[in-house]
Length: 307
Ligand SMILES: [Zn+2]
Image (tube, rainbow, N blue to C red):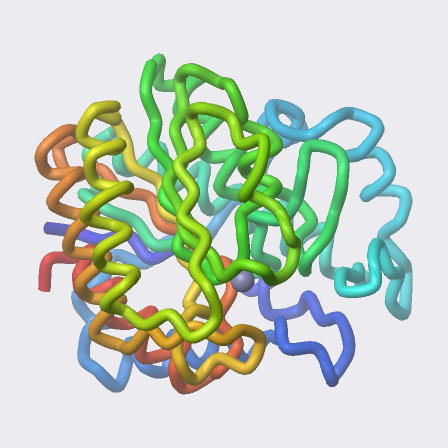
């Protein structure tokens, strides 16, 4: 099986302050571990293109897109919310992050690769149709899903979100869209304090309490995610791959281990093998303990590549 590894240099130039946990070193932690593990040599490397205005406008409002363009500073940092800021390179980084997911979608749909991993930042799953929040500017994964539906004539796309935070942005964009289901788990209560009430029927959320380990997560996957995915029979599977449920992560309190990321990825490759010729597009979301992030993402990529 071939795996496309997609990134862009601009994703390292987006910085929100030296104190900020969503930092350029996150991408180095992943790439360094891929190299030292020997896995990097087995991947097909691609440079992400920019997402076009048309691609972004499928999931974001025109006023929102204009606001982001006008807010981009020539120097310094402009805050969109207390956690989320733009520097002069951020808009380009966010556009390449979304473009990476679009390219990944095209590659797996054209069978030029089996699976794809987008090593990009800023992350995207908190970005709602008309709101930047939680370190996210454009909802990259949602841009890719909308591209798959519009340009590849698909009728059913599934999203899996295993970041420790609820993917409120993706839920905002695809709630009640019959072409999409999302399965996910997240620590609750925790930022952004959503996803547990008045949830649309196509959203299959599993809130997990602080301290939950991989054992409980595996039961949730077996009991909730897999039945929902198998009933839906997706034509492509997207993964919002956040690694902040890891026990070493400083931003949350779940206790997943390195091996849990291998296990959950193997479950998802089995679903994709059953229903959609193995087509998976995975994109980086959170993960802030640099060593754990590098290890977990490498195990995720290894499992996606079937290695
Ligand atoms: Zn997160």
